[in-house]
Each structure stands twice: as C-alpha cells, then as structure tokens.
Image (cartoon, rainbow, N blue to C red):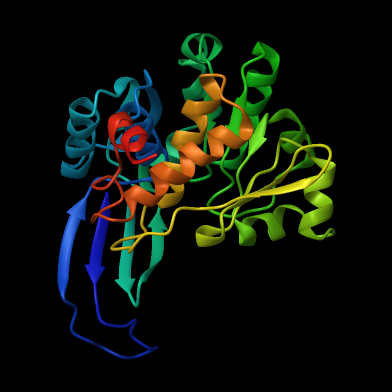
Length: 281
C-alpha cells in the first residue's frame, strides 16, 4: 500500500514542514506491474503475499477490480502488508519501502505457481521480494523456456548467472551502474544486445541491437505524479513483447503508456487502458 504525502519541498534533517495532502492508494512494484498489464489487455496472474491486515484485504479487492487473477496471492498470518512511504515534492518522488509480507515470497512459496509460470508467454519480476526468489524464478523460467523480464528495482547487485538467464533487463541509469559497475553503460549494452534496455526517463530508452546503439525517445508530457511510471513501462513492454512486437515497437508502446501514467495521481490511478494508449499513438 502506498502512503503518499504531497508537499511543497522535502524536509531537511530535523525539519518539520506542513504537507499539502495525504492519500492511501494500492501500490507495490509487482502489483503496479500486474494492474498495468491487465489494463493493457493481458491475462495476468499475480504471485505474491499480503499481510492479514486491512491493507491486505484492500490490495486483494483492488486486484479483483482490475481483473488480475489472485490464485497465487496469499495473506501471511500475523504480518503487515508491504508499504511504500512516498513524498511527492518539487516534481518528483522519494520513496521508502517496508517489505512486510513481501519477504514471505520465498522459492518454496513460488513452487505453488510453477504450473502457471510454465504456461506463461512472459514472466515479469522485480526486486521487492527476496533475492533468492528472483534467482529461483530466473532458473525456472530458463528451464521452462519462458522469457523472463527482470526489472532490477529496487537496485541491488545481481549475480551474472541471473543476468544471463533473464531474457530482458530494464534498469534505469542508477540501477545499470550498480549491475555493471566495472564497465561503462555503452560497453554493457554491447555485451547484452537486445537484452538490456536502459530507461532514461524523459530522454527515452537506450539499447544495442547487435549493430548499433539505439535511443527510442519518450513522449513529452506535463507530469503530475511520476510514481509508477517505471512499472507502467515494464508492464507495457512485457505485454508488447509477449505479443511479438519488435523491440523498437515494444519500447514505443511502453513509452507511450508510461507517459500517460504520469498525467494522473497515484501509481495505479494513471495507468492507461489499451484503448487509451493506442488512440494516443
């Protein structure tokens, strides 16, 4: 659950300021990506854990409202749901994530969902769950021949074997510098053609197609709330790739979806439908 404060500026250390508003809205990287993909027309199964608190109930209701299958989403007894504490100020966001029940998304928990993973067109995963679970899912997807799109956020180092087994990685510039710390980003793109796609916000998305480096530009918009833009991009990119679109077409589709998402409040509040994206292109 996202607990969102809007304020004219960020408080300095030891400073108290008056905020402008407070809202509680469903969030979480995985949930955001699931809802975004569903709105874009995909059949989506979420695999994850919520707490046995009021937030957990609200999160499950929100999935159902957005046509996300919750067969593999379970409440954890005695545990709070994951929360993100978000400050919106000066045109951007700062976020503190408390994992809560997300820590219970273990390899053993994911085992229950192996059948649906095996049958999927694509699996989208992020890093608000334990590292060993990401590694386990990458191994299983590789074994099943199912493409895995790894969104390496929040940022942390990833073992080379996991990078090799993932079909696609979508770091932003900061995350890319952590993943490939011994190389410059251009060398990393050359090493992983059509695999590493670096998102650069308003500057677009950069990748190497095996012959040259390509930047697919973003769509300029007046941003109201950038929370969830990256999740919308990843969901849209996964949907487009699963439909067999080319890399450039998939990025353009994802960039458009992300640009629309920042024009409304809340990570999920602005996530567009398929019709909205296609009409705006």
